[in-house]
Length: 370
Ligand SMILES: [Zn+2]
Image (cartoon, rainbow, N blue to C red; front, side):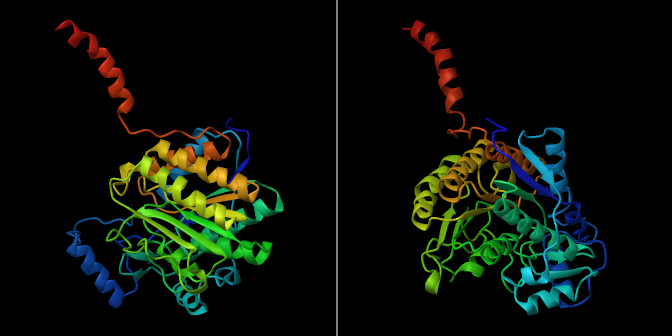
């Protein structure tokens, strides 16, 4: 029943400080020229307003819904900034230095329109630090599971590069912290965002202590990686599992991927902690994949079951993508219901139930015609 379990939700308003605005001045330079060119090429010239898709309204929508319609068992708390030392466990010193040199400025970081504004590093530190706080909470016993509602997202950022609206790889920072601080030997990272978590994969590709499982829309969809053959490198060969899907894949395909690929992988790996890169852009309203709210509920049920079996319930979700604030909020709430002890939905092929009922309604009419 919903409320049978306690879930810690970490939400900190400092994550709202990250807000690049296209109309304001960016640091002049080559990157600025290239991005302006790209935006113009998209038909978004100076007279058309382009707004940064990864905006504060995403997470305020989630927070507003959870305040208006609280989930029993869910407890809210604020986060904390990550330290440079904690970030440097997965990012190079030179990358961190180059980012911090831009502190207080507005600048483009990558041609795929990733940018920072004056408050971005504060926001990004809190996003990564909140994931760390979640790890501490599940290991010091103050929570069994946690959900981090934060931004900027993290899974496209690798050790040396910001990409896809991501600055620090929050989930990777959390995994590294669990290993460093709590002596965790095996971490399972599940990434159900519609986009491949290329950054997380890069960071742990050669690391056999982290099993990375990622369902996503197949290349050439952004970021263009995540082929089935990408299985990890060196000692990490076999601990990267990619499930690239066609754009019309929905609940049944995703549930099958989790039951038939993730579950046996987890049985084999025996994780001590499960982290989820919880992108909500696989929902059908985002036009990437075709997941429904029930689909998210069902996937959470599988993940929670694995956490109970292998990790004494230790499960942490951190928000990644999801650009329709309404859908993002509703998906998050459905996920939290299951984490809080609710029964996961059993997804069906959409419309089948209705067709059966309607067929019954019409049946007698056609029988009479004989
Ligand atoms: Zn995404």
